Image 1 (tube, rainbow, N blue to C red):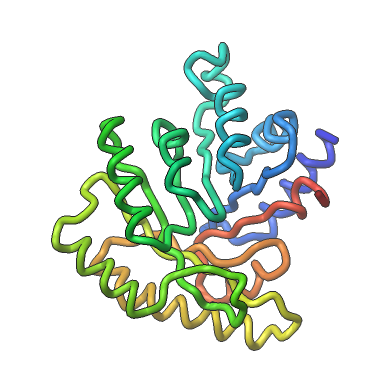
Image 2 (image 1 turned 90 degrees about the vertical axis):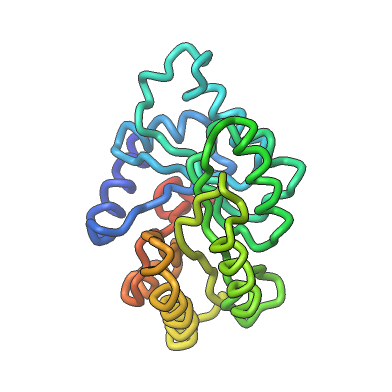
Length: 227
């Protein structure tokens, strides 16, 4: 398994443009898979279950793990829906929280970050897909949050940029329209906000996302194999 992960990571990294960060989505995979990805050069790993994320952190990178120096530079990304009551478990160490789409979640992240004397990086998720199963802020809600942010709300949260998930469809033109819409919002607000991250694209549509300006893609099965 380890050799195939390393080979697949190398192939993905060679295909994704150098300026685009690849988050290796290691959710549901064992700790050994993360170790193999790290050995091949991956540094950002995405998990969607807090319990699994905490377990992997404690096993590999926690100061008391016995080997934190072995994984220097490894950054844990919380992807997917995050419940407010789970923020406290990842606040001490998480590198980036994706998919933030509620004011109440921002409130909780700020509270927990302050308790740990941190400024936690997050991405605001926009609803760009034509699917009710996907989540995210509307354009109007984004404006409200940015206004509150400018007024000094959430001083212990660093809004690093935007993210969004396109409709799951074979219609590449539709996917591109959705990604381009998010890119337009990023271009509209990003320069004044100091944003540097536009996270769009997963294993099935990252090439379209990169063509539309994505600076971060989330790739799982193409690196770790099918779940």
